[in-house]
Length: 273
Image (cartoon, rainbow, N blue to C red; front, side):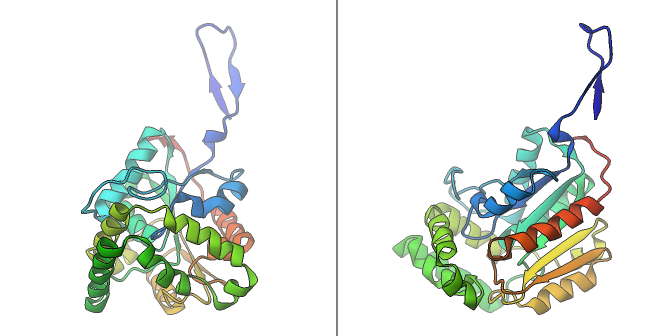
């Protein structure tokens, strides 16, 4: 509740503004866009001002040529929050590649962050083999376009049972991927290949952290989520059954419940950003 004393009024007018609830910026994974947070936009609105950007080159955002870096993507996300005049501290959530952006965001803007939500992501950098595979994918996209990398990713993106139980979800995610621009995909692959090691950051994180991971994630093993959680001082780890690398879409109710519990436990004193 706010109070506003206006020169034209001879009384103190009270008002409510939904923007007073904490802002939650959700950063999408690769090669997706902000629409992957559809279920969160619908269900979390009473608990947070949910902002889901399309990173450069993805979704409806401009297809900007690379190279990209995690620092550049984090700056983009910070600039958006500044443009929207959100209250701080806000909560940053990231899925997979979005988690890498969230780590970079924390390093560069930690004074503005009141909590972190890390979904289906890892703190470790790419291995030598991982970097080589990024370069192969970049070459593939240059030669054959974005569609060349979509099917191999779709094949491992979900829990095995999701493919049979929810083919519409698989199609929905395929459609999201197909909107990605070659510039965005190549730039993101470069940024992921060259991203810093976030493991040294983990013990330095001094805000509450929620890690959500699918029990059947075929891309990032659950063990990596467990190791991250153990290295962070104030961290809750939620492992969702029957979910792969897209737990927010495969098990949206359980995912949203975990986020709501986390948001309700945060004690954020809001200030202008």
